[in-house]
Length: 330
Image (cartoon, rainbow, N blue to C red):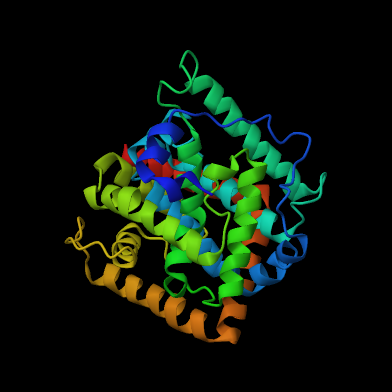
């Protein structure tokens, strides 16, 4: 049972003061409850819905930045200070997640297993540095157990709550497959079972996601902190170098509409912004959601994008463009 099922207040008050035990799963890297037959299907499902999975993940991560505790941690690492560092940060995040879907995270030595260990070690280093001198169970920890649960929400929360709005399958077995996949990744990253958002069936996990939405994500987005919004805008500028339609104002409207935030938009949309928003929604929630051939074509396009992005020359070209944009903004 998740601690969220007992009490959300308890989840926050206890979980925020507990760091992740990164050494816990060094010997047994897979959880005892893993369903190998189920998780092996993830590659086939990813092949069908790679674009909508990417959209669900990146939108959830943008929502996460409005959480002041997560924003503070991200800002302190120095990897979000300008457009170039943000490009590399989110390029590698997206690349690692794509590798996890396409390869065998359950096999030691596989490239996807190795990148999970890399992420785990990066988290451990940041945690050790930012929590130096703090007392467990007394002080608020950076990258705490509660933080990692909420980060899991960023990857799967919107997909679980609104699959059709991110263009994903509404079949129970497909959503539960993604949930189980992220439960295993959570375990491999050191999340204790009682803080693992994704252990359980669809109804249970959906209820937890709704609780986190109501208590954390929606209030923080509604508050619309200016510093967080600025970071979100810079992330989208960097992503727009390889993601068509990754524009700040249309994405903010997308987030507000999806999360049913009953508040006037904190930004002003012009005609071009509304056009981009409507085209993006029509493609994602109508064409991509309903037509196999459209899903195939869009997925193939983004496979081509990833192939091109492997080139260090292309990455350097994008970095140089972003560096000039940074200079013009300062």
